[in-house]
Length: 372
Image 1 (tube, rainbow, N blue to C red):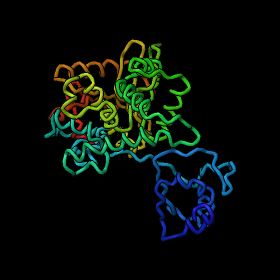
Image 2: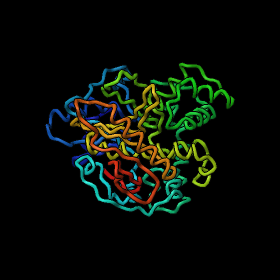
Image 3: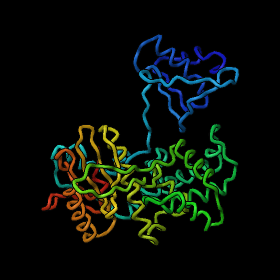
Image 4: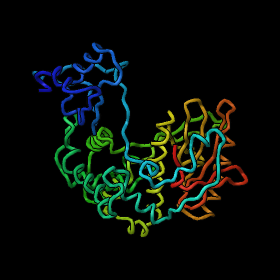
């Protein structure tokens, strides 16, 4: 019906109409645009899908047909997995919006490192919330299984030879590089060491597919104006949209994270990045990372719509690690000059139980206290 009589398909019920996995019937795009033009009302249709669609589509006869971009008529939003605040695991006592405006009250969290190990492996999948732990942990595994067996081979304009084992090995190698600036060559080398070589073009195609499927969402580098002439590293930091994809690929559960605390720390950083992105989406803010060639860094940088900015470090470690991170943030902030705007806040996000403001002005906040 969608293909033969799209106008009827688009008027089956009351508005707004929700069309889930709309890319399966992507030929409705132009007819939908025409319906929007004709009726002129806002919010007539909600299109949800698990993959971005190509700009050239097929018409009713199967011939290539240019698709209207939808500019001015259709607004695109990214649906993410749930943040800890949305899943009820963060008490939300510390707000990014409040911090931006200089508002802060000390707070406490009852979550500990074991809880964060569980949150990393569970992920923010809706079906994993408010269910038994073993059921919750299975959801990311189910998603990963479908991803490597079907989804990565489903993009028509980016065809990959069906090879589930290669897909599994590639995602495992990518997972070992989580929260790092590992190059494509480094990931390919890791893949080769684990019994599967891959050429450059195929690797790039896999990465494009994973981006189109909203599996990979790398963190771009932030490039401020520096008083110094220090060169900025422009490599992306490697991240999945949810860290549970990495643990599923690595075949590790919450208890297994404690056998490799370095990897645990990198996955915790990825969990923080996930939540910061979700919170910042609601604030029209962007999240980046920063590293220069002097190895000064910030795990996350928030760039607000009005030009305000904030620097964030992520630490799974003890008080000494937090203290070093705070000092590094202060030193880095003093070297950044953006139209004479100092950062609106500096923050270290931790696994701890106390949210407080240090004497030097740096906030120390447990992830399970944050919200937008």
